[in-house]
Length: 593
Image (cartoon, rainbow, N blue to C red; front, top):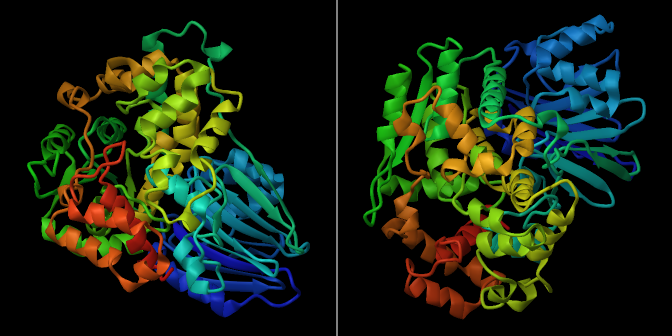
């Protein structure tokens, strides 16, 4: 796990090495174990390394293979790199390291852009062909690893975070009205390739882009599972589906233990993280390091779920670490959390993840996390309603169920020059759901959530918060083979038992039933949910700041109404409306936009 950056010139000039260095410096937290810059012709690459596989200097990046005339930078982990290296050796390749980065370079030389089809893992990479001057950019299937782009007629810059591109300078930092529309409608989800900053885009998940020396490019999406019932699964019973899911999850968890350093688990005490712990114990892991976080109660809301995480830790004899955060630390941690965000993320648990990651990183460099199971296996309470809709009615049902606001609502929130001309968020949902390959209404909703919302909300949140402390988070529920299996699973098996039914049945084979049958839990951060003292002070400060007044993003009357009753106004989804506005403004101010 690392941070990568680079620049490619299209105007005949040399790349700006100082700009690449500034980007690399901004990524230092993602890779505290090594730093490198490489340049040849019109391209320069920068890298910050977190040593997980091949701890020697032979794994340093940027990595050049002189024989293959390739140089690359890589962020992530190829879990099947040892198998691929064996295959490549049989094809005549020689290796000087035991790193997965070198496997990526040789796999590209051997199979071209089709190499991504063979990778099992999470990744973003940039590879330069010395002879042609081409630049190859790639991103993993579920977008677990980020890759941001800033292109002008003269050059392309790319980096593992949006703030790194800002550090390089020369970015159009005007705000994108269509992205703002998505942020306020879709619970802060801004779908690739957009970001709220007009001059920064992101490479979509499961995409490879080939950039020519003149700046023209072509790109293709190399993976999209079918959300339909398949002939090979015909006649499978509920028990057979349970066993198939458990076997696929077991393989996913096992793959994610590949490392030359210890691997821990973020244990919330919910079904998903508890299953990971149980499967690792089943694989013979002893004294597994597990980590849980909780907060002080506010407004009568409990701030922890330790009773469940403690139960799992005792059951499997883990080396358990429990972190309790007092409310005053939430407000002091808020600014650091927002500084770690590549894009504004309103979910309260960003603060929890950031504080937890700080402590976890003192103990291990790699953790597994249960993120993604609710989207992949239909675990949220709104999915039954979505499943009841007719297939052709699903877009409107989804919008009504999941969106925070309607297009009309935004006119009362945003200043006219910041308001998109039409319902761009609703149009995105309708167009996505109209694409063939989703059989039922629930299939269409889960495809949208897994391949768009999940990528640009919870997955991005986990990456940003963990990597700010040099901690690598691995997400077995986003193993692409498990996602393919879940996509084919009959909707009624996923909806059973209040949601995630097939996964709960798998859990009953391994876990205490109190954990499997517990109420659905969330990462509670009461000090934000209820706009407690210091957090509210920070919100008022941001919205009344000179930068906010100059920006003129929001309608003054709407802001005044929210500030007059901070805990009263909720979005249609139940989120604190004031927090959603304030988070965006604090993020813009934090990053100098």
